[in-house]
Length: 160
Image (cartoon, rainbow, N blue to C red; front, side, top):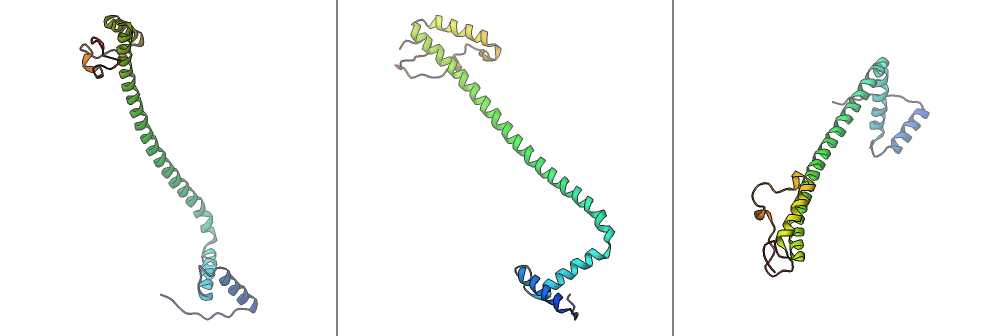
């Protein structure tokens, strides 16, 4: 609801109001809207000057808390994504290292022309590396990678 009030201004005040409306013409398409804006601010400031001192710290605390929560939520999501990515990279590199050990055993068997000796050397290396690099049950044959027959690097136990 809008009301109409006639206000008589001095020439200087009218000039200043028109200049203000001209400078802020994007926000206030008319002198009346600019005057309503300025009058509203003046009235709000004069209603209870003590209220501003009480509200300002509360508003600052609310803004700080909202900002802290927003940043914390973003950081938590980022950390979770990075943790998952790191875990995937570690699992992949572990699998690659395990495959590389079997390839090395196959290459060593081919170079030594003695698959049994290559298997013994590989087992000694696994013992020195620790339990997490030893095969988990079985002979380990099912975990070896397939190498095509006739390739220069044949699996242990097969002749090229």
